[in-house]
Image 1: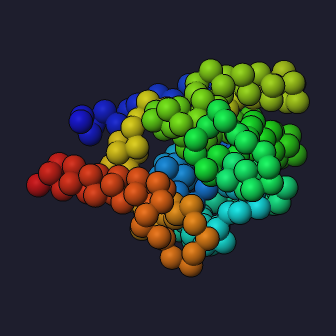
Image 2: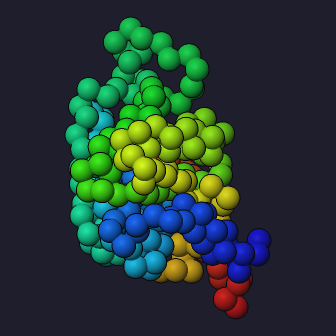
Length: 234
């Protein structure tokens, strides 16, 4: 892993996304309480842009995740922190209990049309505040689980958003699209993101269970990233 290359990859995506945009106003960061969102908020704060941190609350989201995100946002500094509650959004495991089968995705915590809905809410916020750019924290590996995290999908949503923002256009960009999960966490350590405040657990406990996919991925990413950073710094 070329650690010096990580920042330049993200800088290239950032530069492409804001090219010609009025970023002096505001950018929207569509965030959760996880590692990738934590690193994205820290990165954007270093860039000096005014951040509208937007997070979406479906019915089964852990209150602990939202609390963690608030702590991260306070740590890095954001211009606005906006929470949208959407209690009628069910995860596939909940839909199964209601008699609906979501066959296309095996993840029990998948929400149908999730990113289209979340980014659509982001367009609402963008039109209200006059923002031209929205960043998501999806990394390169996310596309394996969620096709609506792909570059093609983001480009399509950018075109949709441009209908609402007129001649100025609108851009939706996955900031870490060229980085793996480990790359993102390594970058986070190097730029001082408050990773220990992040929350990745899918369960509703007042603690991170350590057993769900979110927890396992988080622990693995932190351990591997710390090993890489330790070797790099020594």
